[in-house]
Length: 232
Image (spheres, rainbow, N blue to C red):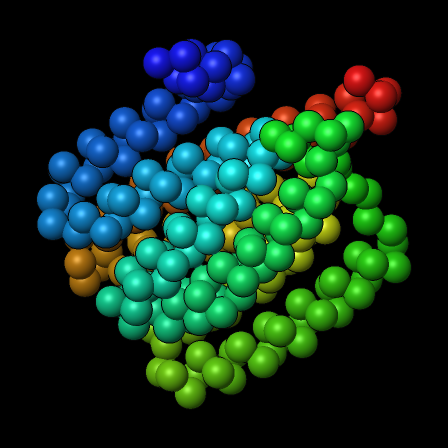
């Protein structure tokens, strides 16, 4: 009970409101459109919880992202979204593990619940973008070989995911903005999936809430960065 009170104090009212509204929307959408794919429900709840911890720069968010990636990979496989499956199982999950290690190794002033925000230099940004182009072209042909459904948005998802996981690993505030871009792609991707299966509406709503949370995460990391630069 005491630990629960500490968690409520740890999060701001805005963060609690975001998390509660995310959970409520996920539950309502599941009951309204699904009621069968419990794995989707569990994955969505874990994903929403990971985002609120990530917004605080807490390494626990990266641990939960690993779990979410594994579950989301299974869900993607069920709809032949092999791009999503390969991306999350082969890239997002391993990179979340590397990010977890990186965040744990760089606590802000010894506070393990907050990572030190990093600023990337121009050379590294150019390197990242060049690498993302290579990854995009490589994955396009891999996805084509697997006869992936909706290959263009699937490939775009790989690109935005790669940039997001790279920035997360490097502790840049812009990782949340990259994930927001990925959320937009995924909303389109799963909207296409609902044409043949209405139950995937719950997945769309999940990523709508992810978008809101990621945008908040970007704003909060900007504040964290300014506060850390002042030495507070």
